[in-house]
Length: 170
Image 1 (tube, rainbow, N blue to C red):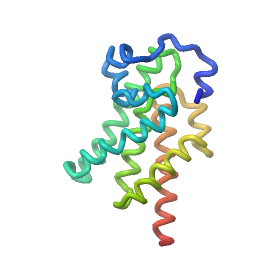
Image 2 (image 1 turned 30 degrees about the vertical axis):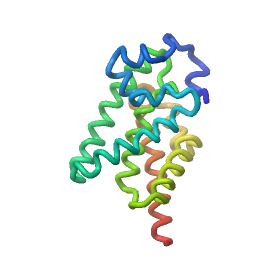
Image 3 (image 1 turned 60 degrees about the vertical axis):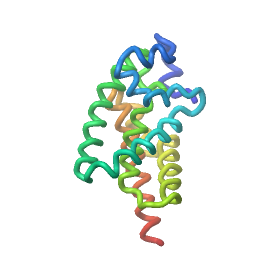
Image 4 (image 1 turned 45 degrees about the vertical axis):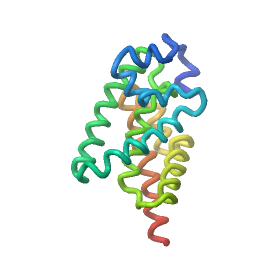
């Protein structure tokens, strides 16, 4: 899927394994390689959040996990901004650290169970892809690393609101 940003700019560099390994920011921005998927890299980036969450959640207290998310968000602003500048496309589809951090936030608040985890994934991807207001506004008007990271944070918020509503109905 080509984003509007990609349609208006030509890549300076074609991302691949060499690009991924050429700088830590690229490795992180591309979600440890998950963003190199030829089809639906955002979905693969979102899926990459699951093993990270499963590893970290039992090892970190809630406070430490939230701190990890905050640090990851701010590192993501730098890394995604740097990678976007090197590519010549600020919000290139293969930059998926934003999906990973946002999905980690969703998973942190997701009730246990496979159905909840699947619902969390589906809701987050729905809002990340469709970009309802005000997500689309920020996606279109905020550029650089903050713009890349922020719209996914909003999509995570929408997913969490829906899950909270569903949980109260059950």
